[in-house]
Image (cartoon, rainbow, N blue to C red; front, side, top):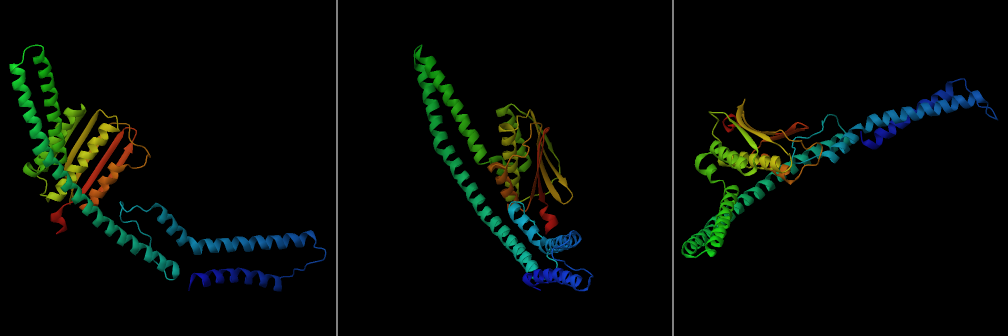
Length: 316
């Protein structure tokens, strides 16, 4: 039965019941209307309106649930669906909407994958140019300043040595940017070594205390999954330093059932109910890239970011 005929049938039922009561009930209407008759008529009208409203609410409840899901759905949190039981136009609308969500989630995952792959390629290109061009140029400038400082008289020697120190610090900063853009340790030594290096460098650079807990005997992951784990840890540590006002951060990597779990927890002020920024949404996109689940728990005592990556051996 279509939505139109269902609503028509509900209203016909209510009006038919009211008509039957008027036909067979011992009720008459005087002119002018007396108080008792007015009470009966108004009461009957109220009963009809209430019954009609209740029946329509029940009939249109799936539309309300669909509208609520449409206003809150987020393609970065896949799996949000409505039950598809029943028949009729509303059930068909719900099935169509669920199919549309499925298609949009697949398209979003595919487009995010292309964007992230292109982003990593661009990062690799920029890091290579920084290393080959800027880094080598600054190294040549540093050597030239050293030779000039060795031969220069005072006080010019002191000024040249000061410029040499500034150049050395700038070169170290360029090298740090190269490591952030392209984690060479990850490619050469693996995920655990890369996370260890990241935590050590982060602690040295920001002054925060970073506690590491990496479980031994983790399953072997492909390069794409390891890169996602590394980038999520990198972004989580950056958020802890910039926004959390934390003094301690714990980074853990362990096996949990048929999955590998990365957790980054700080003791900062939490993010409350603030809207998610570009960093967190970027982490969610990376999680979708490898079929992982990202959970963020925020409280006044700190924020915990948990990335659960399925074990590829369990999926095969």
